[in-house]
Amino acid sequence: MKNSNNKVWLITGCSTGFGRAFATAALQAGYLVAVASRKISDIQDIVDSYPNNAFAVQLDVSNADEIKAAVRVTLDHFGKIDVLLNNAGIGYFGAIEESDDAEIRRMFEINFFGLANLIKEVLPHMRSQNSGHIINVASIGGLTSFPALGYYHATKYAVDGFSESLSKEIAHLGIKVTIIAPGAFRTDWAGRSANETPGKISDYTETAEATKVWLRNKDGNQPGNPLKAAEAVIKVVESPNPPLRLLLGHDAMEAARAKVVLLNKDFDEWESTSLNVNF
Image 1 (tube, rainbow, N blue to C red):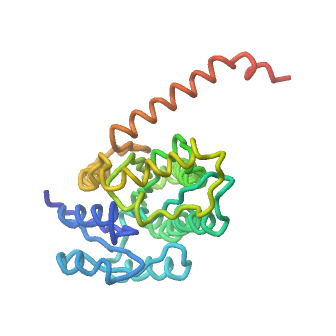
Image 2: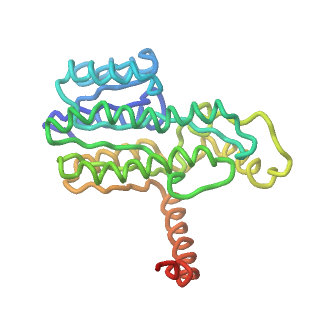
């Protein structure tokens, strides 16, 4: 599949996992791609494989100066940015009471504030061209929650809510927003990309600790294929009517539908109480 409209993508976190799959798929489809990573050496092979379409960008999304520089050099090189794909992110495992404040804040800086700041840096350009597509990789963990992931969920719920609000602010400007909500995929998320609390409280053995063990043991055997996720993202970008939210994976669909059932159950059972509060 070759694309002839020369759309320019800026993709973060391209060294491994989803980011590498997204960048490779976009390049294979004929797009122009600013391939971003904290270390250029980690993405040099991608750029070398597509010398006419790929451009390496150094970007640590937790660094405000590097965000500004990344957008500037991408615009200098390609002249525009049509698709911003915010993929960079990390995990952190631990019961809420056990979790380390510094690790939590680091995760928020990467998963949420880095994403938000990059969007703010790109928006003036997209507004000037009256077009663009912002794709934010959240998680099924931005819609429903599990033990041991409370603070990770907080970052992804933030991405989801932020993105929905953003979509309502900029739709009239010709700029689209899509939230990607993957389930379990064979990326580094449950491996080296996720730290965990060193301290353990025995009262959480059956909840948070059990979930941590399950996540680590499943690493490398998750059902989701990042290459197929990348194909799905290409389909979204090429759609004239892309979704606000795209679930990826059987597990994501099942978990999201279960959350809807739970919400409706509470809404229905407590409807009279909910409505009996007005003057």
